[in-house]
Length: 282
Image (tube, rainbow, N blue to C red; front, side, top):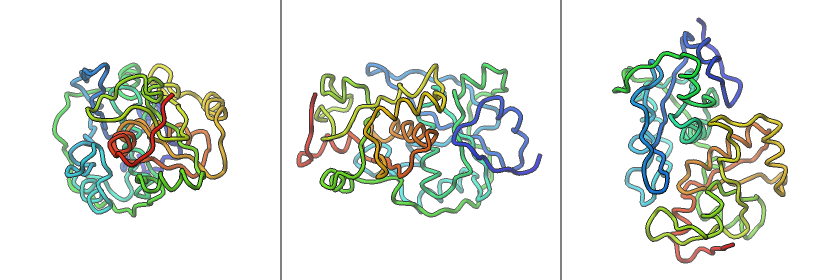
């Protein structure tokens, strides 16, 4: 099967099944453990056959950073992608074990590096298994080094000084992907030492509202959800706990045709740790 370019941010499991033979297709498992009430949800021990593990924690984050899941930097990302076997012409489908959770982070990171030939598998591993897709036991990556290259676009992933400047300029609306109780300051943060509440002026949009049974809602539903917020042409900033589920909001916004989108990398883990940054509750 010849090479191709993925034209949509999300692909369905049956699409992947039909196109697995494409010469430039790479399937990435970007699963992160998902905590529910302080306990990690155990992931299946299987993966899509031939998938490579996109290790967000150890390979595609700055392991020396204070906060989790911190953007690793342009050169570090390129090196990690090459070690994984990603090429300049790779058509990438990324998934996770939970439906859509951490896979959106990997998708956003590739886009931040200028690589737009990438999509999220709608429904992740459960959707793949439901159509009879072949799986195998999870194992070590089995690929030769790639020639991936890219250039970081700083508008995709921003830091707290930029968010603070945005508060003063009142340019972009900030949407928070955490659960509503955390946003309101009614529930304790899972990370010890964090303040409760949210970034002043931000609005709550739990990432789960964009999903139905682990899949992204259709465009009409997404448009209805986003249109309930005071959107402007200035764009949106997405935040969450540590920069993971904020990318689910970015994925939904992309599907809705919204522009000028940014993810706040440190998110609440950083903001809630810094005493000089303002906080709202309720």
